[in-house]
Length: 125
Image (cartoon, rainbow, N blue to C red):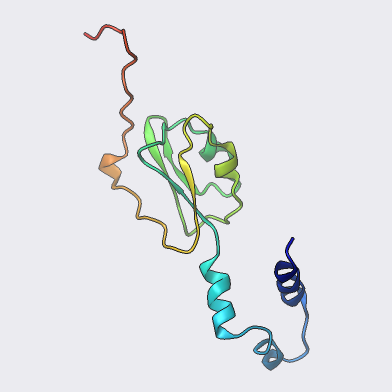
């Protein structure tokens, strides 16, 4: 952990006597920086294969989707734990870490059907 991160952690852990004392911990610029660096997670609709792994592992049931349906993270219920990123299969890499910018809007419900590519050499009817 960097020295700056250690100091921030110690400041956040303080219990002060008066509410006004908390105003002295951070400048408004430092507060803005802290919030702009909060990590969010997003499921790339181009990469999601609706495997259900992230949805099943999410500790707050914050991922909407189903079998054959592109998954979407409900940003309001997400606790930013990163479980979805950790469990998304490497071959898909569908979960993206977003920092310092807004999470893209979810795709519309009617466009959330996964279209799987046909394997080469398979006959189609």
